[in-house]
Amino acid sequence: MKETLESLEEFATEVIYDRKKGFGAGVLRVFLRSLSGVWGGLVRLRLYLYRERVLREHKLGCLVISIGNITVGGTGKTPVVELFARALRDAGRHVAVLSRGYKSKKPPFKERLKNRVTGRTVQDPPRIVSDGNEVLLDSELSGDEPYMLASNLDGVVVLVDKDRVKSGGYAIREHGIDTILLDDGLQYMRLRHRLDIILVDSMAPFGTGRLLPRGTLREPATSLKRAHYIFLTKCRLGESNDALIEQIRKYNRTAEIIACRHAPCYLHNVHSDERLPLEALKDIYVGTISGIATPETFENSLTRLGANVEARRRYTDHHRYTEQEVLTFINHCVDRDLAMIVTTEKDAVRLPEIDSRDVPIYYLRVEIEILSGQETWRECIERICSPQSVEAVNRLFT
Image (cartoon, rainbow, N blue to C red; front, side):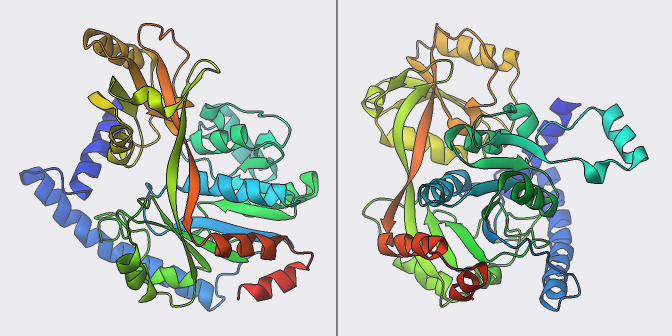
């Protein structure tokens, strides 16, 4: 059943990105295009209802910062969340990251049914991925991105719950949090945002240019007007972003714009603490395995670092690997006499524990590097961390 659903998801993805040809793909495109009109209407209605206060936002009494995007996946959001959390923590804020834990494992059916029947579901606390001192859940229960954040951020609380009003209240009561980061929070409007950070992929700023489900836009490009800050992600060193900035200014004339790139740092062995410098990739032949939204970006980054990518295995976004899938690919790489397998950090937390001595597996560690707007970035953090009331901070950004 799982394999069938993933096959359908992969087929739909190929259709959405116009990579799939044929009669069936054409029929599906027409059908999805009609649904996109319905989706667009629902999105605009929802935004209108919140704007007119028919649907009410909840206030928690602390600073809430949303980090999100208007497209589905692929903007490199998790490293930006990590950048913000680390900067705010180091400046003395008590930070919690709230995530919905996309594709995390649900509790057993019997437990969920019992909770629903007894009415305990609402009272259940959020999943505590990290209490700021240690990681308490694995990636299967928490989701790959929350687990990554928890593993990389000492002193930051990471919680998972679809109801982020509930998890935010829990963070304040139980952990004394004064700053909440909403991971992928732009569309989560039940909780009032004091500050909206919107990420725009410089390589595909408006996705496929069409709304879901025919395209990859969650909201129309006009939603960029809600941003206080816009991060241009995946920028290239030495390349101008002037044309993209001009496009963005059509929708938002006042937001501060910061350009950044996902800078490769080192290779880390998936099953040990071994690290290799990036120079280890120079002129060697490697295989790649990934289950992310834009595998081409990852594979091209290895090529730019000097590696020859000879074998590729791609899965759907957030795919949870089986031992057999990984062993099959390892054997394939052994047959090709490849030096190593390289994956992403997000994929690494979903790989099973196996013996990979024949072909070692490394993940490419990347971190955000600000290319332009460094002063704007510093001012943003200083304003958030200045000793003012939440109301005063709010006035700075509204």
